Amino acid sequence: TPPSGADANAAASTLKKVIESYPQEGQNKVDLGGWTIVDDSFAPGKTASIEYKSGIGNFAKFFNGGKPFIDDLKLEIAGNGVVNVRSSSRVGDSDLGVNQKRLSYLVDKLRAEGWDAPEPKY
Image: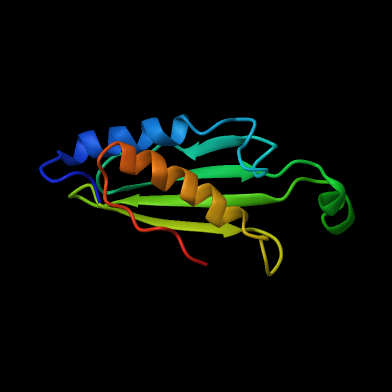
């Protein structure tokens, strides 16, 4: 939830700034293969989409044919600036905590901007 009294367009702009601040080289041993904004719809009433890639470690080589694992993050921005989040892995039953680490990083950045955001739980 954006800060009280924040304009929905300003909230969407802050959200985009936080997403773009995420390191391309990953963080906390996740997303070492970088990320791409797939749908740049950071606006009230729209849904933005981001694709994150794992590094090519032994796990990916063995379980995913040598390709990085890909996770999708969907950010549905309501008319009032409140954001609904969906983060999921494309392959497998478990992501080994990767999505939670990524979301925790983003939550910390949003809180620093005055947002009220719960700690992600999986």
